[in-house]
Figure 1: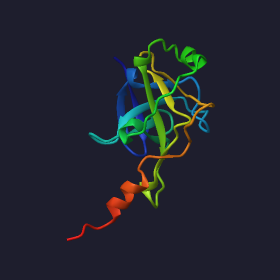
Figure 2: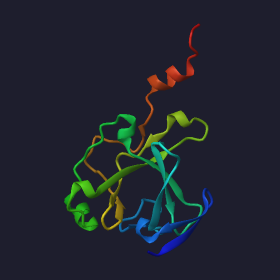
Figure 3: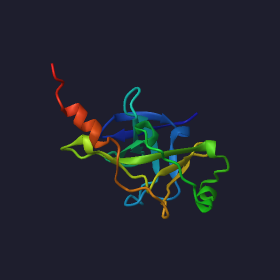
Figure 4: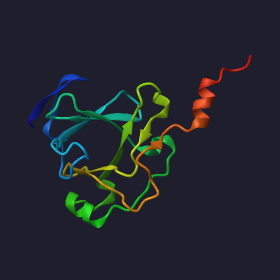
Length: 157
């Protein structure tokens, strides 16, 4: 099987098998000129991964599955979206969300649940779905205030 060398400012030079490259047939909003990506682990057992551009060393997104954070995240994929991805079996879909981590306060990280990334794991076609009629938000907090307060409050001795 053929492999591709990717140059990344975060990971240096990495080599990935061709079958790990994801082709965005519908763009990530704001990044329409980039269509080839690969998913890389952040670290072992981390709920986060990286969506690294194959063609732009500086472009990588933090992604996650909101269910890791206890968020009930289910939606009906529009038929048109499923057809574009040639997705016929829900089990073949990988659904992740883009994460925004404020540099000065990582505890306030949010996920874009209104624009999930959907990947057909069989053919590696992907797109950013837009859930127009949804209860979800583009800035859903991943860590509730209650948990942040517990972590910042010192234990009484």
